[in-house]
Image (tube, rainbow over all chains, first blue to last red; front, side, top):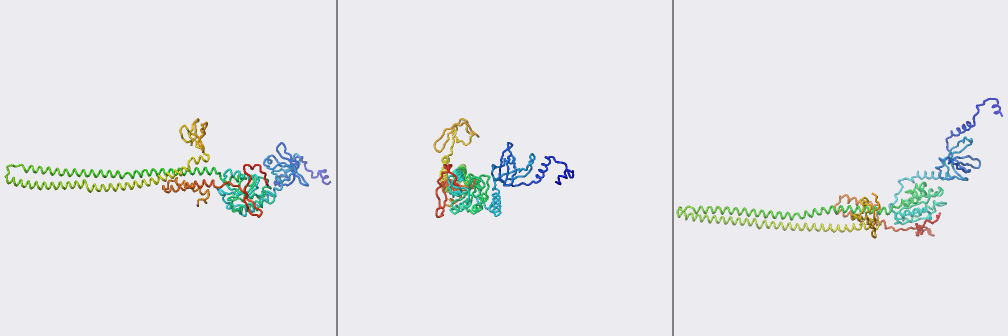
Length: 496
Length: 87
């Protein structure tokens, strides 16, 4: 009443506000509070406007508030919101000017109860992380080609089918040991943990996959339990987690040695592709054979050079023998010339001895005697020289040099024989070895490769094996050799 | 045999090293041949390792005494699409 009177009498009467001004003032006051709120309540009057904005009313037993979620926020929203749902929403409070009503502007809406679980998740994650349970240093390597794979999951679940089909498609040569476990509901966490312990006790598995298919956070909750995380860490066998979808992260994922995004992903991660391994092996074997061929070729060339080297001594011997013969001939000739010289001198002397008829008979006789004497001595000398020469000739031409040469020849021939024999034996050994190697190489030959389903294409135009598409002309006939039989094919197109 | 206990990946690494050693041309013929024979043995062993494990799917269960027991897994993967989720 007092206040009324004051207004009437003009005391403290401010300028009147327009409605817009009033509403805007309240709105501004509200907007000053920039805090976001998490509000819990029940959804009603859900309506999706043609504009794409979502309108609803959030209420509890005593109060209610209109809520709008703009299209921009709604597109990020994964959960569908329906009447009667208990939800948790994040947003801010403001005033809707057109009506002057209070409104909640929601940014995010989650099913109720999630909040509590999320808090629990974060708390456990933080605690175990601080304990070092998720340390990278604790992660064990996953075996490259496990012979036995343990699996802890629901026996009839899609997750098991996905794991098995993926793993076996990559490599069927594996022993799988499934430890069935409940993966949701009461006691699921304890069962999963016991499953891990059982596979450890069994001891045959080289790696364990633990997981289940996708579901709500509540469905996946067993994999957020501390007991499961500790069982994973306590396993002496490396563990791969495979829980839900790619976007779902669980405590088990953090604890595991390796996190697979999905059960299918786990099948992929746990097993290498046998076909790829086989191909890599084939390629490596081919490289091995190629490298050895190179070594063998290089050594064969060296052997050839050695064999040529072994033939050389014979030629050397022939040369030496020829040189000895030539020397003997030269000696013969020289000795012959020396004899001829002596003979000519003797003839000359004899002629001179015969010449002067007027010399006294005595003189002649003396001379004749002397001449005879001289002739005799000269003849003896010549004879001696002749004998010497002959001996020299014989000496030179015949025995010691010839013998020595013959001895050398024999020795060299024997050496030669030994050398050639040795080399032949060495070469024979090598040849034998090469033959053995060739046998080995055969076991790695293309036919073996064909048995694995590869094919060899031969261009009938030039008879060459096709290794380069560029070498094939359109219309070329190809003969495709497969494990059993051949296929005639015509080139219609090629890609290079 | 010691090689039998070697892991696949270790043998594969050894094989690739062996090939590289022969390829380097630094070995004598005898050493090359020895390395080659080792390589061939590794290829054989590795190929064998790829095939040696027989496909077998089993289920690990506890019997009435609480002891672990292995039984065959009866559902074939290929026909398994109609299986209902047990959980």
